[in-house]
Every structure is written in structure tokens, then in C-alpha cells.
Amino acid sequence: MKKFIAVLMISIFAAATAFADDVANTRDKTRNGAIIGGLAGGVLGAVLGKHGSHHSATRGVVVGGVVGTAAGAIIGSMMDKQERELRQINGVDVQRTSQGELNVVVKNEVLFDFNSATLRSSARQSLRDMASVFDKYGNTTIEIDGHTDSVGSADYNERLSVQRADRVASYLEGIGVRSGRLETLGFGESQPRSTNATARGRQLNRRVEIHVKANQA
View (cartoon, rainbow, N blue to C red):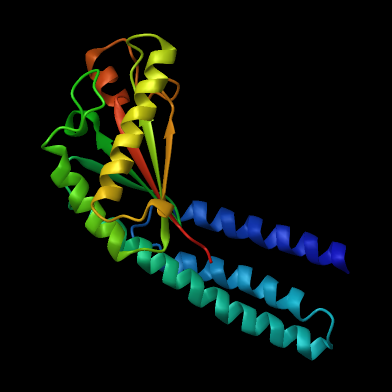
């Protein structure tokens, strides 16, 4: 029985993931989150009711599905609203990378001068605008990733990317974003978006990415 339930859970979550991929290009993800949440909740309900009668198990599926659907809809709605508000901020590019995650790419020229980890004065307004959105939707984790072009040594670029990510996190914390929500990583030149052989490509590679992830619990 346990093996059957494990296989069932894997199958349903795989189907839910495939469904999410199929609809990833739609702007409103709330309905998709509700369906995925309902599938997951139904599995949970079946597991919780597996030691009871057939009717208990059935009730468990129904209850779990209702709870999961509601949770998925809430997360989807929260991320939909957050996505729309972040798109209004100048100098950022917002992408919905999954049902519960947004990727906010901040153009490097908005934040830092070349070869510097000191925030430009003009960058602070964009970060304040982002912080006001983050504060409205507190049930998220905010991962800040620093990236550079390939000019200079790999070790130097990794240190610079860490410094830039830390500087953004420190500024957000200083204007009220809880430190417990913030994580920082530096990738240096290891994850380019474009070629480093041209000035335009290097400009695209110098960036900070902010991954806003919905907390599931």
C-alpha cells in the first residue's frame, strides 16, 4: 500500500508539473496554481485517510483537494499581483519562471558603475520601489544573485558579484525588508546571458537577478 501511494504521488506531481509547463506562457497563473494545489492536496488527503475505511480515504481526498486548491489559488493570486506591480518599476525585467517564482533582472547600469560595488544614487529609488512591493507580499523568500561579465579574472569577478549581491541585500534590509527573507549568491562570470565578445553582450551579463519565491507553508 505504501509503495502504491508513493508511486501515485510521484505520478500526480509529475502530471501537475507537465501541466504547469504547458501553460507557463499565460499571464494569469492563479487558475493553474489552484489545479496543481488541488492535485497535491488530494494526494495528501488520500495519505491521511489511508488507515481508515474506504469512505474515510475518499473524504480525505476531497478535503485535501479543497485545501490544496485554495492554497494554490492564494499563492497564484499573490504572485500574479506581485508580478504586475514589479513590472511598473523602471530598469527591471520581470519573468515568471514558475507558478511560485518571479525572476527580476535589474540592469547593472541602474545599480552600479563599471567595476564597482557601490550603489548608484539613482538605483536607490528602484530598490525602494521593489521593497515596497516585497513588503506587501511578505510570504516570500528573496534570493539576490550577482553576475558579471568576463573582463578580469574569474576569482575577482566572483568576489565582485558577491559584493554587489550583498550590497543590494543590505540596502533592502536597511529600508525595512526583513533580513530573514533575504539570501545572496555571487556567480561571477559563470552564468552569462549573452556573449562576452561584444560590448552589448557584456552589458547584458553585468546584472543582479532577484528571485522572489513563494513560501509554500
